[in-house]
Length: 204
Image 1 (tube, one colour):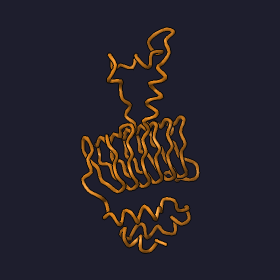
Image 2 (image 1 turned 90 degrees about the vertical axis):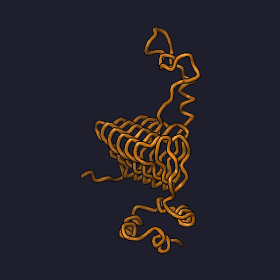
Image 3 (image 1 turned 135 degrees about the vertical axis):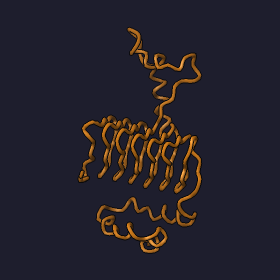
């Protein structure tokens, strides 16, 4: 068992570059995290790829997820990366910096308390709202609203987790911003109370 704490846990076979990881975070075996920010308590299970993403707190990311599936230049004569990773192929050639800068601008935003299912792919530029669920093997090409459940290829919203009023109240409560001690104190209520009852107990 891995006991998580103030320092993030990164599996020895994982790679993290140019990124910021919050408290109680975990990056699983074989995963790659590049140029991203991952909030407190979030985790990515094994063999997940994350790039150019801002991920909120308490994100649950299953194995073999790909967040930021980089796209090839479909408007060019060739799709191949010799046109932008040119230094790999030609003496004296430089990489196409503008191409990579344009990629970085298509960042992904994933909200708090989200669940990204096994094998899902999140395409560049997508925003996934707080509390949303993305089904296994879904390919997300459009934004997913808060507390929506999206599945399929391409992913479509099939239902909402809660009625609109409950979702709005949950967003306002923003329990994901609570300090660690308050989360611990409320643990039994997180486990046992339906969402509406939880809100009734903790709303100011």
